[in-house]
Length: 397
Image 1 (tube, rainbow, N blue to C red):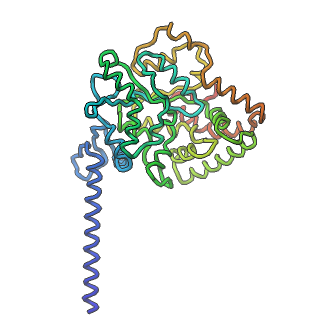
Image 2 (cartoon, rainbow, N blue to C red):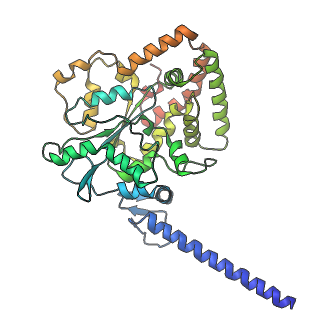
Image 3 (tube, rainbow, N blue to C red):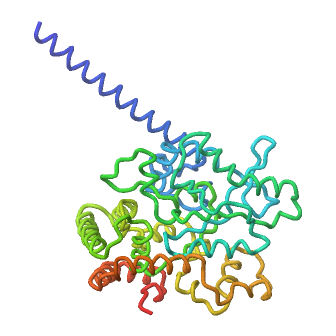
């Protein structure tokens, strides 16, 4: 009797294992077919190390395919609804949804708080080819939706532009619209939280992956400021306790946390988490951790990286013309650019007012705090300058 029971249990165990194995195989197969419907399978059925994606139009490695699976799993509405074949008659990415024209941004302008994205944005809107009747920062990716209504809200953000181009297809065909959400550069931790992903490990995908999935030919502009100065300005603008001693204590605390984080996690993960928590947000200014991800996904000719210092103190308007050239729209006549010359930027004026008020109330930043920040950011500035092959991003001059 005992022998019979033993045989029955063993048979039940084997059958259960087989059923679980079959379920796992079919479930994974389903996920692959659902999440990667447009992948071309390689010659070897089991070889995922090199597949060709019709979505990305470039070789897709095993790690990239896993990113696709996760994005489809967590945000099926975003990837499924916004990834479209765009209408060829428009320069801007637009598509038909039923009989309705819908549009996405042609370009994204990102940076960080206190880097000058606002001033650059409004100067870009001076160009007649850049649609200007639009709010700068919808923060769609920072608050990425998982529902139809959330995606609809983002599409509605560009509705005025969509109605304009569809109503004047010849006159507006060469016009473009942008998304000026500064958080596009750095707020990857928010997308992870929105998806409900545990952050003990690595961040599985970033904004760059999502934007590339929706619009592989998007143009991306980033403007970066000296990390120490940006962190100081960010603190004075957003912190409730603005005293120099409090600021110094928080900087020491954040640097200690960052060093501890790096013992078990990657620079990308630590910079994104540290950038999203309470002020001062040191991780935002570890630019190499963010820029490297964008250039992992997009080719260099689709990403333009500027320095705030070059923009704020330009003696001519060549830099703005360079941005127009990058966007593949014609240069403006010199007469149209005269109002821009030798003016203080919007954020520069605001920053001076804030800094002056805080200096009068609390005194200047402690010299040891600035030194601590300079020493913390120096190796990451070195990495960025090396990566971009541009010594200006050392911020030594």
